[in-house]
Amino acid sequence: MSSTEELFIIDTDTGVDDAIAILQMIAAKKSGKVKLLCITAVAGNCSSNDAVQNICRVLDTVNVHDVPVYRGATESIVSSFDPVAKFHGNDGFNDVPFEHEPNMSRVQDDFAWKVISDLSKEYPQLINVVAIGPLTNIALAMKFDPELSTRLKTLFIMGGNIEGIGNVSEAAEFNFHADPEAASIVLRLTRCPTYIASWELCLKYTSINMKWRSEVLGSMKKPAADLINKLEEIWFNDWPFGENWILCDQLAMVAALNRNSIKKNSQHFAQVELKGDLTRGMMVLDQRHQRESSKPRNNVIIIEELDQQCIMDQMRDAFNQ
Figure 1: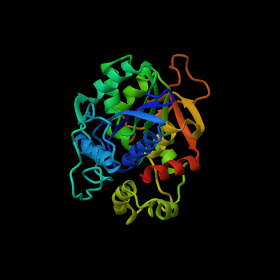
Figure 2: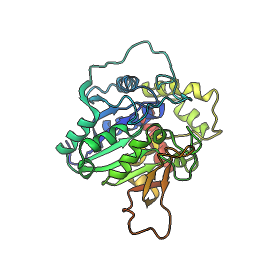
Figure 3: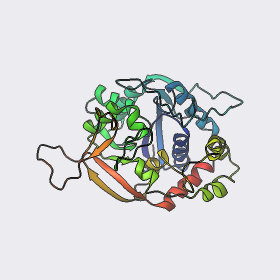
Figure 4: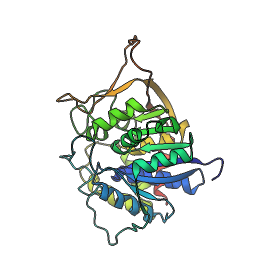
């Protein structure tokens, strides 16, 4: 391992935006900037089995065969979650047909939560975890190994919301809504710098034009671009977000791979609503000027703005493989 390489683990429910985030990481890996220790799968956008298969398909597409893949949680901690609106189709990849099955030989026997714990002991204070699905695996890892988060360098999460704007429900973002108990556990137990790319960052505070997406990324003739263009085509036939190409997991990855891309952030004490009929899964920030002394320390760093050029550069690199 080079002394300049950053170490990473990706935990993903491998929908289409997850696939692009993985490609961002692979582009950085190929440039020698990072070492990707493994990718772990979790149920969310699709079943954990489909998530594993989709990871392997992405890695095959860009001819990467040295990254181990591990299975993870097959359902949320308390109650099973089956989204009514399957935005990524049934299989996470919009049910797009493929001629060949991916190479599954890289899939290992150990479970995600044990692997994350074991690797953190092997590389204490060196691993950055990028969690871009429901937080079930991360929560199980923290319960399995209570000291885990003290050995992580950073944790980057795509999930939650900061202004009560929901997507899968009136007031909750998909990843937190899919397993609110897991999100609550992670925010309660984390002790490392924990960055949050919220739904509002994706929806309101990042703007990448669909014309640029179509003319620049859409015109690339590379295996990665071919895969993503094929997966996103079904969305673009009926795109609900106007001229803005909505990025989600990609934004957490931008920040994780380039800390300097974070132009504005703020620290908060965050919790997750578990009981509300309308607000279950909503992330709640304590934004009072005077907080009770009994309240714990700030536990999250909210990413409020990312450098647009950094985002676009990483998208080019991801597609150009």
